[in-house]
Amino acid sequence: MGGRREDHSKLHSITVEQPLTTINRAHSTLHLLGVLAVLYYRSSWLLLNIPTIPYSLAFTWSLMFASELVLAFTWLINQSFRWRVVSRSAFPERLPNDDEQLPAIDVFVCTVDPEKEPTIEVMNTVISAMCLDYPVEKMSVYLSDDGGSPLTLYAAREAYEFARSWNPFCRKYKIETRSPEAYFSSCSTAVELISGTEDEALIDPVDSFQIIHDKKGATDEEHSALPLLVYVSREKRKTHPHHFKAGALNVLLRVSSIMSNSSYILALDCDMHCNDPTSARQAMCFHLDTKISSSLAFVQFPQSFYNMSTNDIYHSFPNKSFKNHENRFRNQASSIQEATFLASCNYEHDTQWGKQIGFMYGTVVEDFLTGFLMQCKGWRWGAGLLEVAFSKFCPLIYGLSHNISFLQRMCYAALAFQPINAFPVLCYSLIPQLCLINGISLFPSVSTQWFLIFVAVHLSWMCQNLREGFVIGGTIKTWWKEERMRKMRCITSDLLACFDFTMKCIGAKQIKFLLTNKVVDEKKLQMYEKGIFDFEGSTMVLIPASTIAILSTITFLGGLVKVIMQESYGAMFGQLYISFFSMMSGYPILEGILIRKDKGKVPVAITLYSAVWAMFILLIFYRW
Ligand SMILES: O=c1ccn([C@@H]2O[C@H](COP(=O)(O)OP(=O)(O)O[C@H]3O[C@H](CO)[C@@H](O)[C@H](O)[C@H]3O)[C@@H](O)[C@H]2O)c(=O)[nH]1
Ligand SMILES: [Mn+2]
Image (cartoon, rainbow, N blue to C red; front, side, top):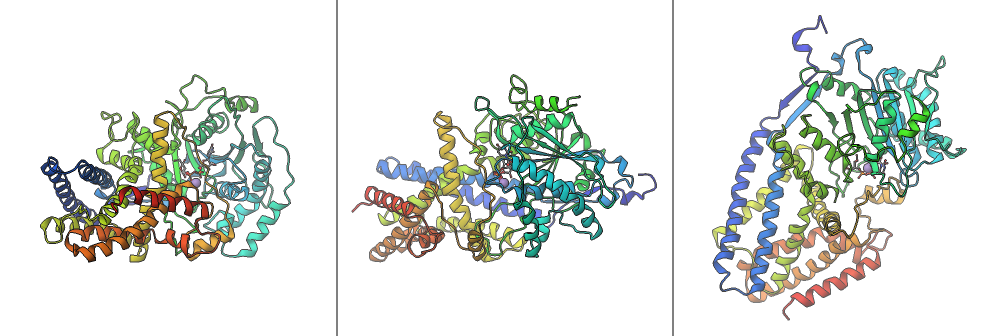
């Protein structure tokens, strides 16, 4: 690095975002005061009135209090993301000019099921990795095929052939998007051309040894050299737990250790691709900084979705995509037989794999737990979630003596505890509504000062989300979609996660890794692009949400009539408002039940179950 000027030699930089950080801190502090006031109101009312009120009312208030406590807790741990907002930049152009000085990288791509994870997509991931802007002799790509499918093996060979001409093409025309599919998605004819070669696939059966290695260093004149591509299909047996993706990654760790043994790993899911060819170099800007490299475990890149609709209704939390794990667990040795042995399911028996070594087992969110434990061990930065939250690895408690800041613990905790929001959201979707139609007031009357505090906390919460939405280019409309989806998520998947977790605790069920289906269905895509919810194939998971959608419409209308008749506007305003919001956020479901006739409407069975449930709840809780 000699000869460079001081100020231009830094490989990366970090800046604290101002005035955002200061605004966030002020806002969070004020909000906290409001939250504490609300909790004080609930608890003091309860203590004061408990001797005189019926049990049922005391229980109802306790549930509301418990909900608000949980909401306050999850809100609080989420403030960790707002407390110190930083942005980082990497300067790959400042890396040593001599590529010889770059460390070697192993890229891991995992796939399981060619039905749910279309092979062509997986190959796009593989190709995008092989075509990274990184010296080919310093890079090896390993494809883990948990399905052991001959099609995947065949396609890997084809992908390798394709990459031989694609790589020089990208370099010549300076194409940034190195996933052929993502690149060609702007011109449909070319996409057909690519899938054409796939259709004619001749399928070789997979050989009983698991590792197939393609043409190392095979180069011809017009084609550029390519990184090593290794296909690995590990042995799986019913009698041995395979530990899902973590198991697959650990097999790759062992197999790669006797082949390329690079000190850095890039782990990709089969539906991801590297959207910036310099990303590996960018990661090296951090790993090669001698000031931090000894304690830097991984570099994580933000995830961006290239096929998001502007009408997106589902909203996905962008989180992770590019993980670069430095790995210290290497064996020495090298042959296919040895690799086969390392990929066998007996190999890990009675070893520390998954406990001390490699990616962690015992949960389906291996990335989350492994990342957290790495930080606890001194590495910096950085249903399944509940498994970790309520285990000895609870981020708020585990290894308090370890060198990880409380703020970072809170970030991990915010993710791990997210599903418990199902409880308060469920309570808030049922209790105020049922009390409304029974004329029971749960919130302070409009004329009191306490009412203003509730309003302030509610508005402040909305503002916090609105403000954050605006920062990333959102609108009132996208904010509302987010709010709606946040609520739906709480009473569908989070609720199911809580249920699954409880079942696991009492030993009635095992938590399984549910593979996400990546097949794109044209009709579904059209629906998504128009911003219409697709309920086709919804299962029991939807029942709580659809029951609530039906119930909140009935309770809002019934409650409104009652309030008008009894002229109890002041005492009931809060609950009317909550019921109205409840009804509005359940509207897409209601539409899917009552109005829509297309395939994506709510399945009839789900409608029936929900209607029965709604009636049942009304029968029990409505005092006729
Ligand atoms: O037994 C298995 C199960 C899954 N996978 C692979 O794991 C990846 C993720 O599976 P997916 O069904 O797409 O799960 P997601 O919920 O989308 O995965 C998210 O959550 C996981 C658990 O936290 C992380 O590992 C992923 O990186 C993250 O994208 C895919 O490449 C699969 O092929 C395997 O290799 N073996
Ligand atoms: Mn996925």
